[in-house]
Image (cartoon, rainbow, N blue to C red; front, top):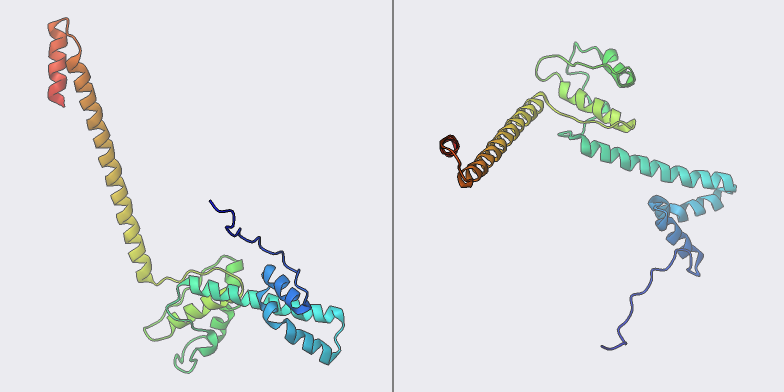
Amino acid sequence: MSDNKEKPRKPRAPGQNSDVHARLQEHLEFLGLTKLAESYRDHLAQAAKGNQNHLDFLDAMLTDEANSRFDRRVRRRIARAGFPVVKTIETFDWTHPSKIDRQRILALFDLDILAKKRNALLVGPTGLGKTHLGIALGVAACQKGHNVLFRTAMDIVNELQAAQSDATSSRSSATSAVRTCSSSTSSATCRSTSTAPTSSSRSSRSATSAARSC
C-alpha cells in the first residue's frame, strides 16, 4: 500500500491564532460563551466610548452572558412544560370576569405556594379564564427557575387509564410467561420420568400419571 495517504490533522488548541480578535473568538467558543462570542465587540466599543474601567467592563460582559443563558433555560423549561399555548398574567383580560378577586389571583404569582408546598385551585364557570391563569402561573414558575408540567384534567385521566392498561398488560405477560415456564418444566419432568427405567408397577403407574398430567 502507498505511504502517501494523508494523515488526519490533529485539532489545533484554541488561542494559537495570531490575530487577537480571532483568538478571543476561539476562546469564547471553546468555553461555550456563545453570547459573548457574538457581542464582545459591542462591549469593547461601549467600554471605549464610556471610558469603563476593567471591572465594569468584565461585569457588563458576564452579565450579558448570564442573562442569555438564563433566558435559554427559561425557554427550555417552557417548551418542556407542555403548555398548549404560552400565556402570561400581563395579557389576562381583567374586564371580562367581573367578579374575580384580582388581588388574590395576583398574590399567587409571588409563588409562595411552591415554598410552602401548597396547592392553588381555580374554580369557576366555563370562559372565566382558568386555563389562561393556570398557564400564566406555570410560565411565571418557569421564569423563576422552576420545572413545570402542564396537564389538563382529561390528560391526567387518559394517562392514568393508559398506565393502568399497561400495568394490566404487563401482569398478563408475566402470568403468561410463568405458565409457559411451568409448562416447559412439566414437559421436561414428563420426559425424564418416561425414559427412566421402572423397577415396579408403582413406578410405571407414576410415569403414566405424570405423562397424562402433561
